[in-house]
Structure formats: C-alpha cells, structure tokens
Amino acid sequence: MAEDLYSVGLPSGALRVTANDKFKKSFGPWLWGSIIVATVFHFGLFKFFPELSASDVSYGVREFEAIELPPEVDIPPPPEQIARPAVPVVSSQALEEEITIAPTTFEENPVENLPPPPSDVTRLGDQPVFTPYTVRPEYRSIDEARRIVERHYPKLLKDAGIGGTVMVWVFIDTEGVVQNAKVQKGSGNSALDDAALTASREITFTPALNRDKRVPVWVAIPITFSVKQ
Image (cartoon, rainbow, N blue to C red; front, side, top):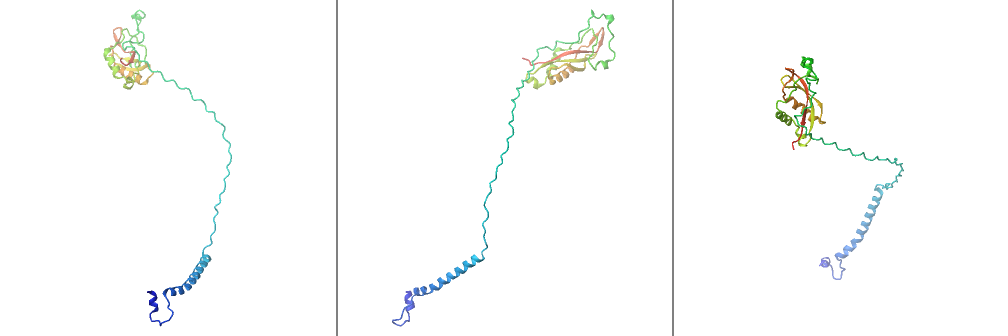
C-alpha cells in the first residue's frame, strides 16, 4: 500500500521510490550527526567536568604500651562472726518480795538512842539516803501493784517474751505516796527501766513510822516484768 502512494502519477517504466528507500537515505546523515553530537558532548564533559581526587583512606596502627601491674593485694580473712546477744531471762521473782535497806531494830538501836525524824523533807527526797524508821512501808494492795506493773509492761517486749527485774529507789512521803523514783539496778533494757520508774510512781504504800510518827523514807523495791505462762 505504501509503495502505491509513491508510484501514483509516475510514467510507465519509471523507478519507483519507496518509503523504506527514503528512510535508508536519511539514515546516513542522522547517524553521523548523532556521532558528532555525542563526540562534542563527551569532549565538553571531560573538558569542563571538575577534577576529582582520591581521598586518603589509609589508617594507622596504634601501638600498645605495656604497663606494669600493681602488686597483688593480700585480702585479709573475714572477721569472726559476732556472737548473738543473750536473750534476757524472764525473772520468776515475785513482786511482793522486797529488797530494802536493812530495817532498824530496837535490839540494835534502843529507843532512847534513835535520832529524831528528819525535818528537811525537800532535801531528803532529792537523793536516796538512809532514814531511820521502826515500821517499814508496805503495799496498800499487792494486787493493785501487780496490775499497775502489768499495765506499764512495754507491749513489744511483752510480745517478744522479754522481761526482767528493775530495782527502784522510791521516796515515800508521810501519806504513803511515791514522790520520787530512781533506778538502783537496771534490767539491762532501758525500756523496762523507764516503765519500772513510771509504774513505781503510781503504787501506793502505807506510811513508814519512826516510833509513833510518820516519816518519809527511801526504800528499794523490785519491779518485775514477766510473761505469764
């Protein structure tokens, strides 16, 4: 069909020119033109392209220096294990048992030789001192004294089963009321010592007598904290 288009109007016997022939004739100029353009382009590219340089990728080797090791340390052996403290032993001493200053007897001190009752009560109550008496003070109620001691027993120590006995100096006035208290011999536990002082101040006594007169005295009483079995 393409050949018929180029042969229309041609005289009989003339050379027919096809589209393929025309394409082949134009191929030469296009080929050489493309080669020239490519050559110029590559020449300009190499001419004007920035100069490249290889970077230094070499690496150095760090030399290691030998150091002297410190002298070996002798580790001492571990200390011996400390023994656990002994558990306080609960005392079985009863509250009514009393350790006091030796009572004054008429056999050793006849009535006519007894000193008069002290007059300076304020000074007498400051520190435990010997006070002559013929009748020693007693608990007004031993059961009430036990209840007071039980009430002041520190709960933590009671629950742990820790008890002890505290010897307490108490200063008892002429009405049998404790006006002062000091620890004579502690139990080894400060909480029990403090509780014993507090309890001893609430216990009431019968007043001490020297001849027929009431006198204030210092006496030592045991305050025992023990867990009931």
